[in-house]
Amino acid sequence: MPTRSHELFQEALGLIPGGVNSPVRAFKAVGGDPIFLARGKGSRVWDVDGREYLDYVGSWGPLILGHAHEEVLAAMKEAMEHGTSFGAPTEAEVEMARLITRAVPSVEKVRMVNSGTEATLSAVRLARGATGRDLLVKAEGCYHGHVDSLLVSAGSGVATLGIPGTPGIPREVAALTLVVPYNDAGALKQVFDRHGERIAALILEPVAGNMGVVVPGKDYLASAREITRRCGALLILDEVMTGFRVAYGGAQSLFGIDPDLTTLGKIIGGGLPVGAYGGKADLMDRVAPAGPVYQAGTLSGNPLAMRAGLATLRLLKKLDPYPRLESLGRRMADGLRSAAREAGIPLTVNFCGSMLTPFFTEGPVTDFATASRSDTGRYAAFFRKMLERGIYLPPAQYEALFISTAHDESDLDRTVSAARESFRELPR
Image (cartoon, rainbow, N blue to C red; front, side, top):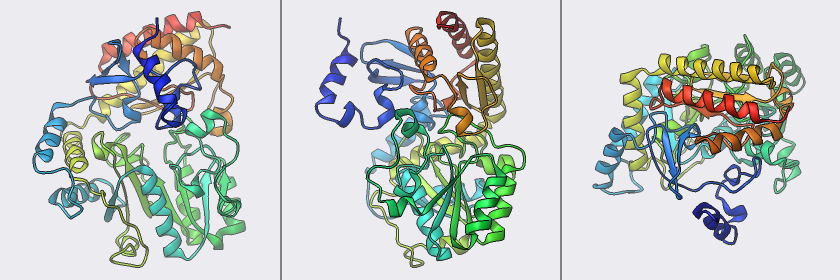
């Protein structure tokens, strides 16, 4: 019998490109129809057909406190009662800026925007404006939003869908981006030795999350910092995913790195659309109206997003859940490895705190090339079997699973048990 999700998807196909408003939601990488979600609470979501799932997508990262957290909802409700948007400054924006600058070591001033894509776009423009240079360097498989100059060799949905090249992006724009393998300091040095005087910035995910989770090797980030500084280029850390996720001060505090610019998103909106970029005061003062680098946004600093984000960040500061989230991440990773080994399934599990990815390949996975060896067909079969057992995983191999403070040990044990059963049913 057709499900309500199936009916909605069929209607959506005639109204929305691909039936979805963001590509990976379409389930093209895993087969079948996407499930349409109706509500969430804590670690669980329910679809429009009433089925319940343990959720490890978490709106792709922002819901570190779980779905519909009472204090976050209360903050949003209070904000709504005073109005949804003004296009004028509010006190909440100042509170958010104060909180971010105190939490993230390298950020002295910050500008709010509406998405991670806006944040990276703006940081790149600022880097070019500050240095007077045009070239960018990025790592293969890192996704920094759908910015023209950053979609070159991007991971995430681009890799999942197997889209070749960058249709719609002029060659002249794509040519301004130089690509190096992630975790390869030698390749980075070669690019900067050859083009250093023309490079405005290196942009990196400090912990890659959009080719699946890939942790930086020893001294990789420190090498990136030294190389960019020596050549007069800026280092942009894209912490849209890792900011307030792997540590309260982001991955830069975890690994002791001092970037010039940082991009943020996800968690600082508490589940609402948001982004931010910030850095050293002398750089940020080049942004209009203080300086000549123009960037603007009518809904930037939206009071609903600010209040939801403030409630989330204050709870994270108060609760300090990161040691427990790290423990849960390790428990999940160890459990999945053990279950796969018992079933004779090649599996590598990378994790950092509450982010992890099971790669269906022999390890190690250290960059996009090794991640790409994964058996995506086997992942698709695993995804479907887990969904049948009430476990909602990312519908693509090259994505991260997210654990929230609402998950507990019993949730993870149930997930590992479901994985054990699913692994046994996979073709060898």
